[in-house]
Length: 160
Image (cartoon, rainbow, N blue to C red):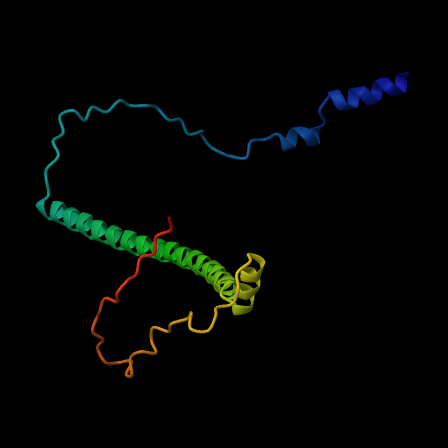
């Protein structure tokens, strides 16, 4: 018990070495600051025309620089936006070209003479008899020459 008491006393009472370390790091008198109210209400600012002119020129130059930077930025973003629009229009055009190709293929298959003949036979139609077909382009000897219009006599057959 006595040994524990001496160990605790050693930590509680400072030794000479510890007291030596506690000396302040500064020597001399400490600096003390006092606040002093200053009254500047009677001071009058004198306008300097040279400084005023310099500040106006600086403001104009800064405004001009701002306009240049904003114009460049606007053009840059518009170029990016137009690039995206062009790409989307190219994709849309490729889709429309593909649809157009599909429609042309469908139109070609619908105009096929074999298909038309097969459908006509399914609906009960017969091939034309000799003399039933009149070619309109065979009457003119020259395809580039003008043709005079004429009215052919029409016969009306009435069924009682």
